[in-house]
Every structure is written in C-alpha cells, then in structure tokens.
Length: 232
Image (cartoon, rainbow, N blue to C red; front, side, top):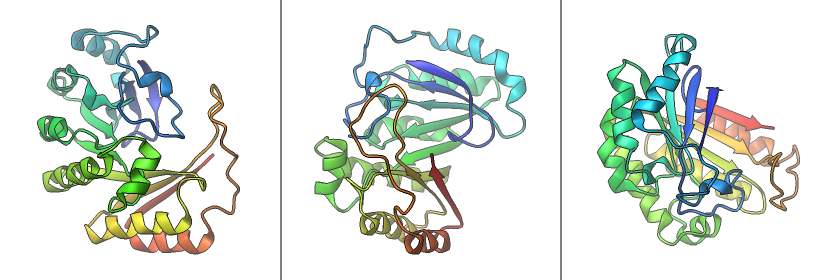
C-alpha cells in the first residue's frame, strides 16, 4: 500500500514501515480503509527484492535497535510476507510485525522470523460480541486469542496495544482488556486514544481529555512494567 520511512511507534527505534494491502476486519475507527481491499488501484507494488533495495538506503538511520516493520492493513494477508521478511533478515536487519491477530495460522509461519510484534487488542478478548462489534468480523475474538498464545509461546518481544474511543470502549472495557493481558504475563501495553484522521471523515466525535479517566490510567501504569498512553 505505502511506506513510512521514519516510523516511531511501530517497534523499537527508527522504523521503515511497510503498510501492506488487504484486511478482512472493518474497524469503525480505521484510519486506512483504503488498505482493506487486496487491490485498491492506488497501491505501490514491490517484489521482496525491490523492497529490500529501497529500504537499504535508509539502513544507516536505524541505529542499534531500529529496523523494518510490516504493518497494514493486515500484513498476514499477503502471501509474499514470509519471503519479504526472509529477504530483510538476510541483510541483518531487525523485523517487526504489526498485526490484529486475525490470522493465527499465518502468524505461526512467520513468528520465528520476527524480532518484535505489535499486537492490536480491539476489545476484551473474552467478550466476543463487543470484539466483533468493533471489528465487524465474525470470529475475530477467537482468532485473536489464538494469535496471542502464538506470540506469548514464541517468547518474542511484543507490545499489546488498544485504540480506544468512548463510542466503542468504556473505561470498564479497557480495564477488562488490561486485566486479561496482565493475567497472561503481558509486560508492555499501549493505550492509543482515537484521533481524527486528517484525510477521512469517520464521523466520530473528538475524544475529550478526560477519557478514559485518571483512575484507570493509574491502574494501567501499576499493572504493566511498560505502559504508554498515546493521545493526539
């Protein structure tokens, strides 16, 4: 779909972020609905070799802990993902994967190749109705739970992250997400407060600074070894 050459929230250090085309979820707050279809007519198309040639120009900026992150859309929809990761790894670069956990079978095929995972937690994983209301994808909660176990069992470094808007997630629901993650040993969690996209009107109200509340934020800070609030 597109490339961000100096990403800062998609993995450790400076990141060359590759946004892949294709996603079966239809999240109500998605900033990139043009990535949903496998072909949009506007996407940039690269072979793994062409992609590597492009990112080599930026390798000097990665430093000691930067690298390449495959995001989306949902990168696990692309059958060329594994080849692309292998090409990047062959050059000694760290590889990150940003996923919604919607394809646990595909995740199992690449989890041993990546150095970091950003795992989206759309809603409380045990609340299938709410999870599917956010993703508008039947079975997405069960797929996420399976993917979480794949990530956890692999031992790879990961950040669980939730994009939140009060129309979809109450403070109580966010607390349920946090409890579920903490009970399973998650150490790094980021709460990303929805912000309006500059290029698309999602018809969602701007989120006030009082959401989700200081009491919940204090609890989140206490629950996780590394907690990040991203707002605006």
